[in-house]
Length: 432
Image 1 (spheres, rainbow, N blue to C red):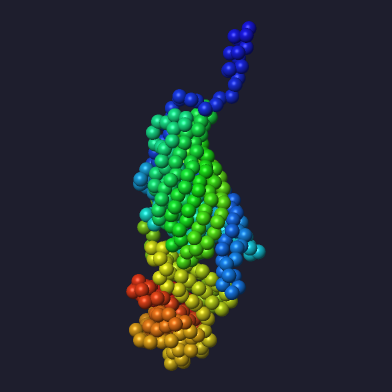
Image 2: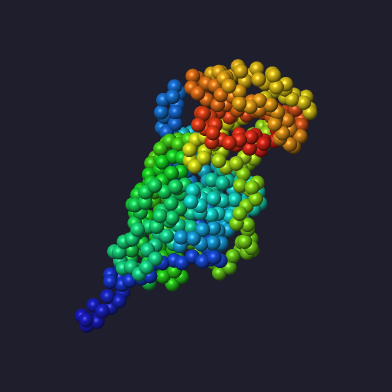
């Protein structure tokens, strides 16, 4: 009886880690694979900004995001999905920075998205039309499941075995534009009949939008040995971000919860392959002035860093390095079909606070099309006593509405900008 009772108790005991047992912990992505994902983010921390008098000020930061989408793999590289078509059922985010609250959501006509891993970070576009910057961030700044196969060792392992997470997977999981250091490791923690459990832990360093970011990760995941896929992940990450050209310094803690379900077939919207290389206008971003004074379609290298009732400020990055700053300002309206005289505009430029003009580099009208008129003045000089180059643009629409675009840069930036100020101005439509 004692033997039978002991055997019965052993049979009923919950299954724990199968010590000595091994499992093939590998996922091999293939074009045509289809999955449904649920990704939730909860984030809290602080952001450092300059307050009155230029004094550093700490603002409390909280954010939440929710993404629901189907994903069909279109191409594979480095053992990871390299390009996918995604259909978003939901993509929303909310944030509190100090006392200011913001809400973001993906437009209904931008739910179909092509997303790809690139050497310089995530890339996405919608075949339906250009994104706003908020929409682009919504679909490129959530946890990217392209990394999942690279979190695994790709071989037979036993409970307690460890492995190094691949560099492409680390860069993708941490949302880096460039990977500086990868210290992420995985560990097999349990094997049961229901699932295989693993952990990811360690640190990584990288660059995002020109800012250095150091992260610490502690994550737990589940793997289905039958379907050979990662099915769930709880990813906890702390970020220590230095101030960059387009973002302030911050320290945050984030928890991402990911659930994955394999689908036998893709939704109809994902049945056909969207173009792998998008037309140029689909890679641009759109921005509309809240008062309807102008609309802007601009290259992604430009980042909006400030907006008031009177001004819109953008900064141009090239490989993460700051190149130039542009300021858009509404100008006095002229009669329909006319514009302010260039001499009047030049007098206003000469009176700009802190600006002392020197050598003139360019001065004259520039063809721009669309019934618009453009005058451009480029000069070397000093701004608040420092060497600078500024390009001043006066753009008039057919109805007489006018916008001034001032692009400021240091002499080195003037060599790198290579006419991209005109590319920005050419994307502006003035008037309602």
